[in-house]
Length: 96
Image (cartoon, rainbow, N blue to C red; front, top):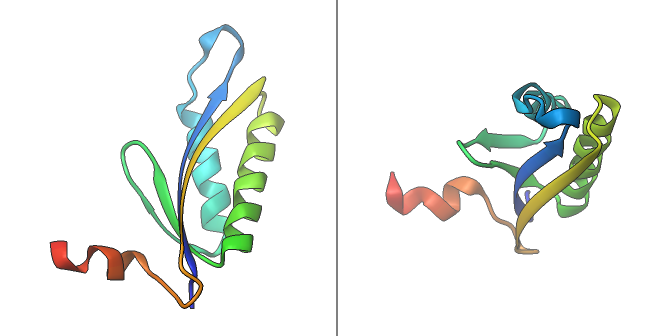
């Protein structure tokens, strides 16, 4: 069972202010390849899983940005941690 929800907005910095959307797409691909449950939203992506695994995915995302030519990366992260379990559905069920 998942014990954390982590939302991330990743902001790569490219030379000469290049288009960052392809890099953001690559960051989302890292999440997809990790196998964790996630939802993409307009300004951030939320992942569900074990906190240590989610932090490892964030590290991989940042590394991927550098591999793809980003000079630096800002990762804005929000964490909801509940050791006895949580889920995106549980937190949003009253809105469905």
